[in-house]
Amino acid sequence: MEKGKIKVTAEDIFPVIKTFLYSDQEIFLRELVSNATDAILKLKTLISLGKFYKKIDDLIIEIIIDKPNKILKIRDNGIGMTKKEVEKYINQIAFSGAEDFLKKYKDKKIKEIIGNFGLGFYSSFMVSEKVEIISKSYKDYEKAIHWICDGSTNFSIKTIEKQNSGTEIILHIKNNSKEFLEEKRIKTLLSKYCKFMPIPIFLGESEEGKNKNKIINNPFPVWKKNPINLKKEDYINFYKELYSLKMEDPLFWIHINIDHPFKLTGVLFFPKIKNQIELQKDKIHLYQNQVYVTDNLEGIVPDFLNLLKGVIDSPEIPLNVSRSDLQYDSSVKQIEGYITRKVAAQLEKLCKTNREDFENKWEEIKIIIEYGMISDHKFYLKAKKFALYPDINNKYYLLEEYLEKIKLKNKFKDDKIIVFYTSNLESQNSYIETIKNKGYKILLLDSPIVGHLIQKIEIDYKNLNFYRVDSDQIDKLLKNDNVNVNVNEQEKNELKNELKNSLIKHLDTEKFLIKIKDLDQFSLPFMITIPEFIRRMKEISLTGNPMLNLTNFNDKYNIIVNKNHKLIKKILNEKNLKKKQNLIKESLNLVMLSHNLLKGKQLTDFISKSYENLLKKD
Ligand code: ADP
Ligand code: MG
Picture 1 (cartoon, rainbow, N blue to C red):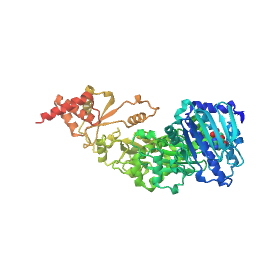
Picture 2 (cartoon, rainbow, N blue to C red):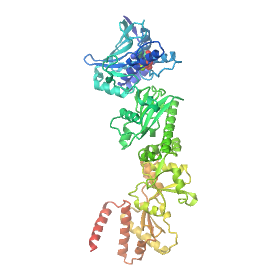
Picture 3 (cartoon, helix red, strand yellow):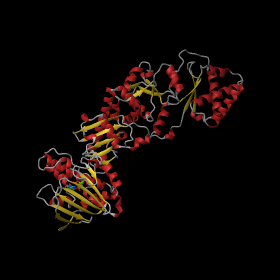
Picture 4 (cartoon, rainbow, N blue to C red):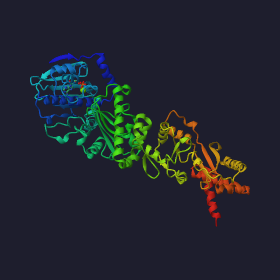
C-alpha cells in the first residue's frame, strides 16, 4: 500500500470550491455518469480502431444503491484507469484524461466525449464523506487499483485483483445527503440529467446482456439521428418523452444539424399553446453531447425562441463560464444568429409549400412570430415572407399581398395607404359595419402585442398607416361628399354647447372632445373614436415597455356628432327645452353604452329609466 497527498494548488481548488458553494449538489451524479460515459466512449474508439475486443452491446453503466451501508456506486465497463492514470488524472486536479485522450487521437474521427465541462470527479465529495475508486485498465498487463480518499487531501492507493476492465466509483454518502440513497431521488436525477446519454444506464445491477428492460435512458434520441430516417411519430413521441405524455402534439418542428462553423444539433418544436402558463413551463433543454445541462437558455437563444420547446445540443457552448460571460461569448452570439435564421427559413418553407396548413396553424403560432418580429430586426425582415395577416372574413394574407389588394382603394392624401384593423369583432362591431359599408377591407389583428408590431411596420413602410376601426381617423372616411348645408355655424355652436352642458353634469369632460362633423346621413348620429396614437402607446406600455410612462397617456375620446343625421336635426328643431335636453342626454347615454363607457350610477339610472319608458309605451 502506498500513501500520498493529492496535489492541489489554490488555483486548482478555487473553481471547485466556488461551484461547491453555489451550485446544486445533485450535479455530482451527472459528473460521475458523464465520466463513465466517456470511459465507455473511449473504449468504443479503441474497439473501432482494432486495439481492443469486446461486444459493443455489452458496454453499460450501472447505478447501484446500497442503502443499509449508505453506499451509492457508479460502475462502468469502459476503458478503466492504470495506477499512473489515477495518479495523473485523479490525484492532480489540473489534468484531464478527456483532454489528453482527444489530443492523442486527434487525427482519428472519434465520437465526442463529454469531459472537461463540469466540475468533474471531485464533485462526488459534495455528498460523500469517503470515495473509493476500483479500476482496471483495458490494458491486459496492468493491475487493477483501489484508491480511497476521505475528502481531505490524503489518499491511499493499492493494487488489487479485478478481472474485467472498467471503473467502479463507491460513494460513502454523508449523513446530511441521505436523500441520494433513495431510489426515487436517484431515478428523478437520472431522468433529469442522463435521460438521453449515449450509453445504456441501468438502475441496479445487471447481468451482462440481460435485463435490458431496466435501462433508464434513451441512448439514441431523435436529434442525433438523420432526419431522413425519421417519421412524424418519432418526433411526436420524442416530444412527449422529453416533457410529459400528457402534452398535446406539437404543431411542427425544426431539425437542426450543423457541422460548420460550429457543431450544433437539436430539434425545436412549435407547441400548441393553450395558455400563458404553459408557455412558461416546459422550456428548451440544453445538452452537451447528450448530457443535460440546463433549461435556462437566456443569452443562448433569442427570447422569442425560448417560447419554443425541444432540445439544443452543442459541445461548443462554454459551460464552465458564468451566465453573463456567456451572453458576450462570440460563439454563443453566432449560435443565436444561426438558430434564428434556421427557424425563419423553416417557417418560410412551411408557408410556401403548404400555405393552407400554415394558415390553419397561424393563430397558434402567431404570438411567437410576432414577438420575434418586434424583438429581432433580422427576424422581422425574414418574417415578411411568412407573417400572416387575417382579414375579418378569415382570409390570410402576407402583408405585401394585402397591400397589393387594397392599394388602389385605400390610397389617401399624400399617397398614404391606410390599413384598417379591428382587435375585437364583437366590441367593435358597429365601427366594422360602418367601414365595411364604405367598401373597405379590414384586418383582424387581435394579439396583445399588435400595437408594437404595427408601430414597427409603420417605421419600415413609410407610406403605410394602420388605423383601428374605432380610431379618430375614421370620421374622415365617412365624410359627406355632397355638400349639405342644413346646419349652420350658429346651430353648430349651439349644439356643441348643449352637448357640453349635458356632459359636464355626468362625465369627466377632460376626457371627451366634441367634434361636429359633416358625415353622410347613413352614418350613426353619435360615435366615439379614440386617438390612434394615444391608444397605441397605451397598449404598448401595457405590454411592458419601460420607456413609456403610462400616466402620460390618459384615456381620450372624441364624440363625433354627425350633423347630417335625422336625429341631430330633430334635436336642433326641438323647441321644448326640457325635451331637447332629454334627447341629448339619452343620445349620449347610448353612445357611451355602446363603447362600454357607461358605468356606475349613470348606468343604473339609464337602465331603470329605460324600463320606465317601456312601461310608458302602452
Ligand atoms: P474531466 O472529465 O473533465 O476530464 P473529471 O474530474 O471528471 O474531469 O475526471 C478526471 C479524469 O479522470 C478523466 O478525464 C478521466 O481520465 C479519469 N476518469 C474519471 N472517471 C473515470 C472512469 N469512470 N473511467 C475512466 N477514467 C475516469
Ligand atoms: Mg468528467
